[in-house]
Image (tube, rainbow, N blue to C red):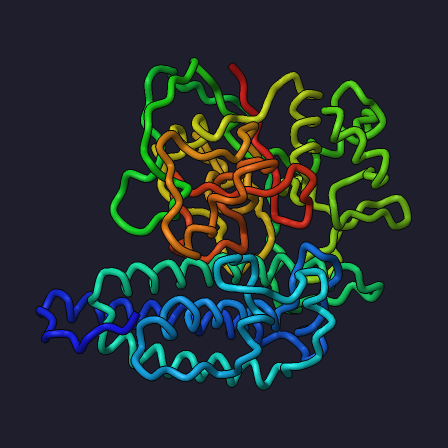
Length: 427
């Protein structure tokens, strides 16, 4: 689709256009800033099929803008390389064939330098598109989607990189300058009560949201209570000491099978040295801090811990209704901790945003009346609504401006490499 030359936009549209240009430059720049600490050898590592090399993330996010914006909307656009569409398509069946996901780390070419050239080429073309056509609604919507898509991949880049570095016996740090925060004792674990009744959930505010956050709809909740903070490493160690990983009664059947087949004995990235537990972080190997939120748990581990404590995980509707009453602030990527931090001692709900994604007991399913968008972009969320569980709240590597009460993250229940933890619920 080629747009005709636009008429002169209004002053309001011009201001909005400048804002979108600034957003584009900031998001694209952050991806490259996150890669500055990397050595050239880091860019191509893929330690398991579920993660991708940093080089691939940089190229795929660029492919998104080239495929969904430049090729259909910018007149006479010439793609950077005819083979990149095959290499850097992730899962869009409507766009065409793609390189197998587990083999992304086998590609020494294109080089890292060529990927950065690709980004610069597409950014230059996008600057033209932004200047000429970004006040067109369809273009603005796709650019905004592309920016949020890149923010998702910024989080994935760090999450995947952590796994890639962790399998190295040298346990190399992503960055040596990440500050270790001195911790006070956590706030005592208490429960905050919420009244049930008929509530509305789903994206209701102004601004961007993914299609899986809509439509808004009514849910009926019983009275419930949420823990005032996340579960800590110290509390999870109590579960481990009480033979939590050896007691089948705490576990769902599939989770217990994973414990047996995978030999789980502790959260991912934990290892014991000379009788002490250590955890691998993006700042290297560190002693497990008992006050920090426990992280890198599967849904099965979170559910087992909740059962051991005589509690449960919240539903996503309960979490959203509660979280909508509090500011959207916390330990996110902009804090630059790149690691979960202890609670701040406030008497109400803490750590709702940032630190760790919170597993809920809700399966990832379409909301009533959900319809995916037409065309390839409709594959973004809807086709994954099976065999996944919902997480809420963001993590310590979630970019600023990329989280809200209605945001629905989702992963298979066995996934552990994400920054995922838990909050208890009752009722």
